[in-house]
Image (cartoon, rainbow, N blue to C red; front, side):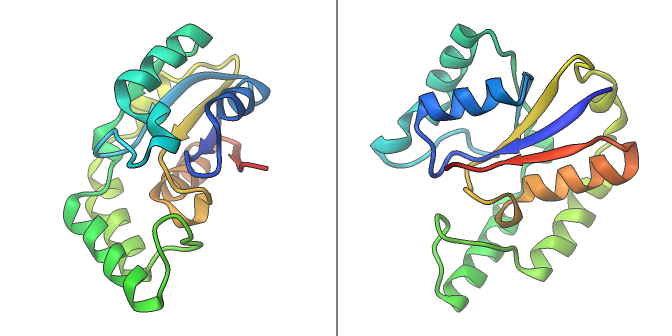
Length: 161
């Protein structure tokens, strides 16, 4: 049976990130970012070309699943909420209720996940990847919740030490 892990970028080094994926027996990384870049030299390893090369070296296939990424408008909605409550993207611990409702309706409500699920490896886990440290602060947790409820897939959230 397929399993789902979720992982962010913030808080990890490349080596720690790859070790966490290996420990979770990850056989596929599903990048659910709209833009596949991360600002700052500390996380330059997570920019698309570098990331794909490092995953290839590690023997872990990679897919960009842009259809699961929030729109620019939805990201801006969350940023406004972050500003209102005084947190930054790197320190966010939760998602705005309006963001959750709209992401579920506008993104997950429009995507047929069955073909994605049917293509997942069954001999390990597939990791939903974005940038936020905490899964609850990222849309990847919403995707994982739906995969668990609709398809019965077990979910583990990988968090940096």
